[in-house]
Image 1: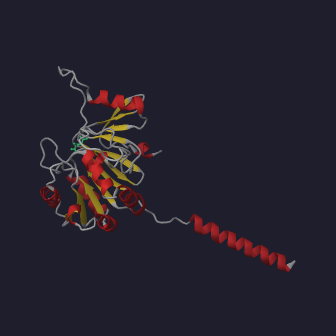
Image 2: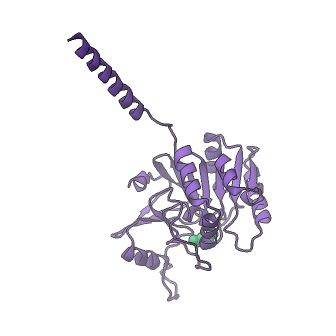
Image 3: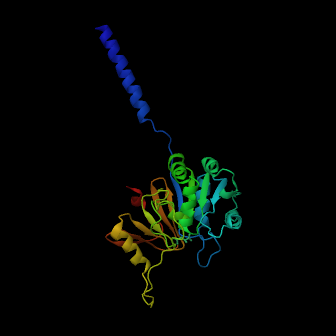
Length: 269
Ligand code: ASP
């Protein structure tokens, strides 16, 4: 009888310890994203319209070093592009160092050690191909979602942060191995989004027409981010920031959202 109880207790203890190990939170990682429509906004110097939000983002994430990913730049002037972004970030007066990923001997190791990356705009096809060629797609996905590496993207850099680059405005001037992107959020973005001008005589497709065509074949929501807007993602909270309304397209409707709207529902999947 005593022996039976003894074994029973051992079993209970084992069960409890296994159970508690499995239910312990692994690490409390928070997804940290800033997805900008563009860095250039009419009436502002580069990155100045977004400056207050970016300062808050850098401070909240204790960012002292940014690795800038310049590969969307089709003409290959990575040094010049990195300098332009470093100069813009210097105006935040946070003493943040900015280094181009192209200056590292081993980009994989650089991303493994990065605190924050910023992927700049340009051509989304060229950018995504380079990320695949350098074996960075899976790695960036993991580092952002598992380690909480802060991610900032602008335009093409915001396109690649989503599930796919199918809703870019860019021409497919090169073949990436796939349109599937970093999948940091489960929807698509259309950067530089612009509503059709009702008085225009232009007969080509409007941006809305093109997004509607996307939805004939695909289901994912598309967030049209006009210049001067960004989506700030703090873990499971997504907030629209900026000076214009964004338009969210789903298969069945499109709806306008004002700055400060809570778009967290887009992160649910
Ligand atoms: N070419 C844009 C950029 O500035 C991307 C886009 O319009 O989809 O990165």
